[in-house]
Length: 186
Image (cartoon, rainbow, N blue to C red; front, side):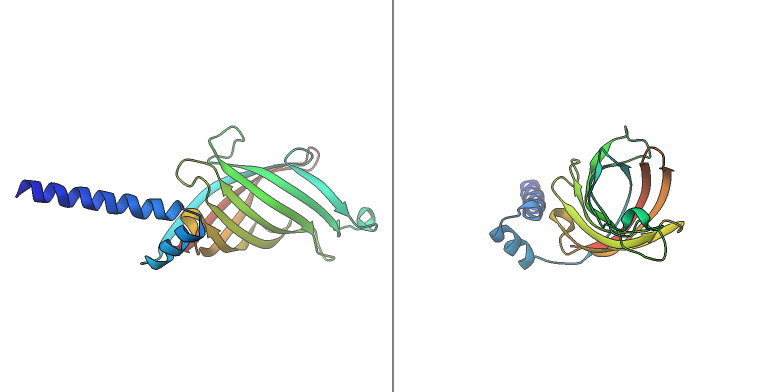
């Protein structure tokens, strides 16, 4: 009887390994097989920090002729590849990058419109992404952005990302943003 239990455990372990392997296979066939095995959605909560340094991890790629005269920097467009870490220090454990653009898109106040992707490189979520988009006035204590989707571990994700400025220095162009994400995914 003991050998039947052990075989059952091996089959369960193998089945769990197969599900994990399918979750990271990003080929069309792998995604199709994964979709055929959808079960119940998972609720995940993530907490991390994103570090912005203008001129290093973010650069201006375009600006309107009127941007310099605009009190809201309207028409400014930056691209970014900001490090994402576990803690508020830039030197803390790296989780990945926030890659995308930031646009000054408001005539009424300094505000950033940000469509970007969190690209994870840490062991747990390696190769997985979350697509996020939202607008945040600089005067807000915190902002919400929509999680529009994901890949890898976060396939079919939807949810809310909240951001709060942890550190901001206009002189150096450095900022750290604390990010909390609540999402549903398979």
